[in-house]
Amino acid sequence: MSRRPAGSSHRLTFLVLATGMTAGALLQSLVIPALATFQEALDTTQADATWILTATLLAAAIGTPIAGRLGDMLGRKPVFVAVLSVTAVGCLLSAVATSLPLMLAGRVVQGLGVGVLPLAFGIVRDSFPAARLAGAISSLATLAAVGSGAGVALAGPIVSAFGISGLFWVPLVLLVVSIAAAVAFLPSGGSRAPGGVSWTAAVLLSAWLVCLLLGLSRAPQWGWASGRVLGLLAGAVLFLALWLLAESRARHPLVDLGMMRLRGVWTANLVAFLAGVGMYASFAFLPQFLQTPPSAGYGFGSTVSESGLVMLVQTGASFVTGLAAGRLASRISSRGLLLVGLLTGAVGYGTMSLAHDHFWQACVAAVLIGICFGASFAAMANLVVAAVPPEQTGVASGMNANIRTVGGAIGSALMSTVVTAHAGATGLPAESGYTVGFGMLALATLAAAGATLLVPRVRRDPLTHSEPDVPTRHPQAALVPGGTVAGTGEE
Image (cartoon, rainbow, N blue to C red; front, top):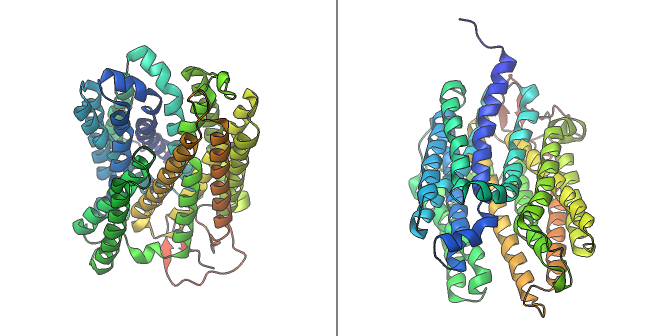
């Protein structure tokens, strides 16, 4: 029996990973435009309906680093298949749900599907030649942004055609196809980390993330000074301290704190946090601005489908940028690509803040923000993967995604607080709320661009094959596919 050519095998591996990641990304955002429809269908309140989104956010924050660690330890292929299978069960639960509790149970299980992101990066690093890593990782990282944007754009047509249950049946079909293809075609083997999972650390990590994200997401509704919010934030600080203590004493930590202190890692995480603050709020507030009736003194009275088309334009810009990210990084380095992407995003948010009188201006802003997503997600993933040994790829990528999620929760909560604090005569948010809010997102994205300058250059980046301006001096080195030895990137 003849073997498949290597190039064909790599393309097939990438397609399987991309399908699974796209399904997971869609599940994060498909429900955003349909929350009012869920409220009516499940006979619940607006505040309770928002838990359909919050439940998945919390589960994703918990599951992502744990899935990454399990993949590093047990093998990425079996954990990838397991995560997709669990996510499929969550889709099925939500698709048949006729009550809020069952819907939320399904959404919690679906949130675990975000864990495929670090697993996919690890599989690519294990199985692709060094010359193709940059393009593959860039494209996969971009799919996380593309899937989120596409979910907002596709929700309306899917609900119109299949009802709200279609928001879960469509990803379920993708998941079933991905599971079958993963079992049949994904390569086995690869680097593995020694030891087990520190479940004490996993519980404490879950505790502080849940307290932090729940407090931030509920603060605009409950009030930043409310006892519940302050109690949750205090709990987050306490559990964070206990988690750090547990990790420092664990024989086999869930997250290697020494790895997190590497300059190539902590600087990428700082950029991820600030970028998250600036980037994620656009998914909810850009369509909301477009749909505001002109009688409010701003906005365009767009329908859900029309605002979805603008988000589709943003998604298209992300996709095209992501496809070109590998080649761009080979010319200007991953750090340079990240800087350019974030500066472009800051201009996009600045445009929405200061120049939003015409529909075309909002479209231009959407394109610039899309370019920011495509370039930033791709470059950040490359920088994190290049900074750690292969056996730590999953957990490092998972924590980077988590830190970006925390930043996104903060940015969304602040944006919601700013917009709703400025009420107009019509009862709708005043234009000044969006002006200040988008300006705030522009400043956060600009701060992320500034933090990019702290990211070190590497001796020989296995993803871009670029040479540094100065030599590396960190003693730890990572053996990457193809036999290339890469320094950790410390200047």
